[in-house]
Image (tube, rainbow, N blue to C red; front, side):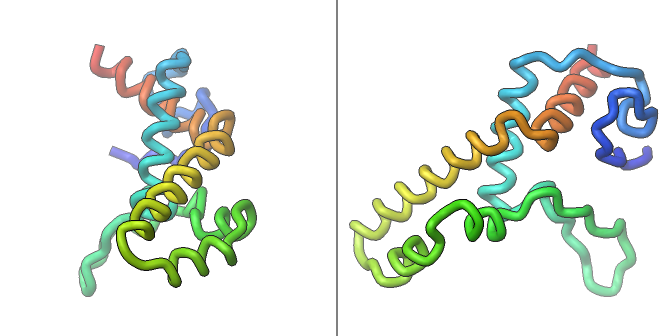
Length: 132
């Protein structure tokens, strides 16, 4: 099976071989959760493919979102980094969790109406249509 091209066009036969599907609010919420979770786990979206040295495999995917670049542009990265490096003990763990939650919340706000989330929601809707 061909890998989707991720163009986001519902008429694309490569992305949506069964035709266009209706994307609901539930699909969008599920997609937002999936995209944010992937970004928080891997630092980018889509999830990078694992390559085995010496074995030819599929080429890496084009990065659509980079957490590092986004944090530098949208979060006070210098203060965040200094606090993460200089704090110690259980208070540090609580602050790190607070910062992680804050960044996750900012990501959700930033990505809520993005093309990345819409494309993922369309993929989810298409998978549900194929299962039905």
